[in-house]
Length: 195
Image (cartoon, rainbow, N blue to C red):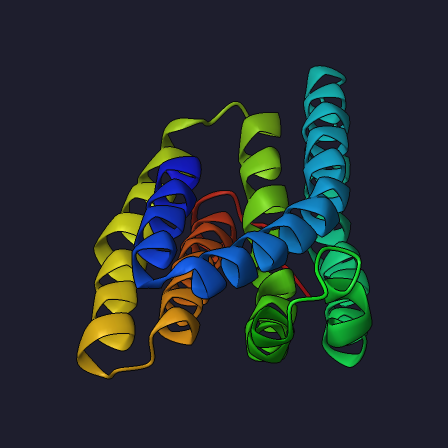
């Protein structure tokens, strides 16, 4: 669900022009690179929770879930601040084109903001896998990305005239929706307290 949504965003960005397509790809590459951290943490959380449950220790499984959701999100907020502060120097690793470099800071600001949401939804999915539940993350991704994020992308990018930043606002909205749905489900159904 998520990969399809992000692939569609690339198609929409490319339709705006070559500069927009390049700026989108640079920002997406940076966001994908930082995403490897929560992706690895997600797998670790799934394994640790499954092991705790296998040993019959539900309290430890819930503790792992709580720690896995909270501390990495704080860490990724720091990564997001770094992305925002060093947007132009990072973009220069990819291009020297002035038009593209001018466009990337606005996109990096949005990508910086969604680091926490991206981290939370990735690790939240891992927590669900650890508890042996895969249907819930699928439904959260379906609703968050395709029923909330995609319409936001369309409205912000086309009707509000925001162009490429509008597409990135849609991506951020989709990630925030998925993260919110997963955290809500964990608190309600699995009784995992996040703070």
